[in-house]
Image (cartoon, rainbow, N blue to C red; front, side, top):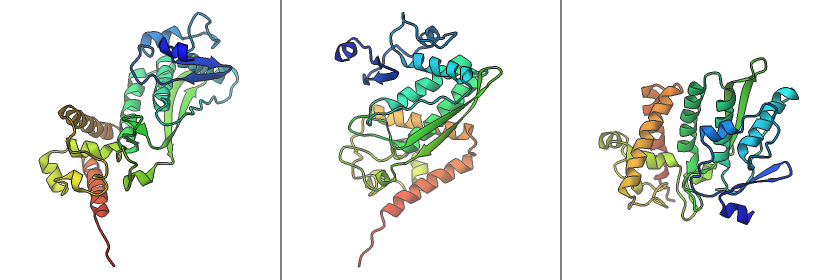
Length: 259
C-alpha cells in the first residue's frame, strides 16, 4: 500500500472493500474523461483499469437495477481521511452516468454542499475544511429509464459543542470566518459585529493575522453562499435574518453571569 501510495495510486481493493489513502493534494483522477472510462455495460470490474472509486459506483449502479434492491456506500475513516471528497465523487459520477439533466443536478448539488460546508465544517489540525457532522445521501432513480431523478440529504450528530469551545489549533464553524471577512463594514455595524475576534466564541482560536489572500477567498465564499441560499429557496430577507441569528448567537456568548 505504501509503494502504491508513493506512485499516486491511492486506491487499493482488499476483497470487496476499497481502501483510500488520502493524498492531501489534487490528483487528475476525477475528470469527466476518467469517469467515462469507468462506464460499464455490466458493472463488472475492468482488469485493465486500476482500482478506483468509480469502479465501485458502476458496480452499485448496475446491481441497483439487476437485483432490484437499494445499494449503499459506507464511507468509514478518521477525520481528514477523505470521506467528504469521496462522497462528492460518488454523486458526481452517478450524475455523469445517469442524470437526465446533469447540469441542473450538478448545480443544485454544489449549492447544497456549499451551505452544508459553511455551517457544518471547520478547520482542524488535519484538515482546513473538516466535516463536523455525519451526512446521509439518498439518491432516487427511475427504474424504467435508469436515470437519476432526485436526491435527499440527511444530517446527523452535528458537533454542537464546537460553537462554544474549540480544541487547541482548531476553529469554530466556517460560517463565522466568512462573516468576519465577507460582510461589509455597514453590514457588520448593523449586526454590532465591528470586531468579530472580540467575541468569546471566536477569540479562543481565531487569529487576527489572517492573510490577505485568505480574507479575499472568504469574501468570495460568502458571496457564493448567499447565492446558494437564494437558489435553494431563501429570500434575501431570510438570508439577512439568518445572519442576524448568527450575530445573536455570538452576542449571547459574551454574556457573563456573576454571583
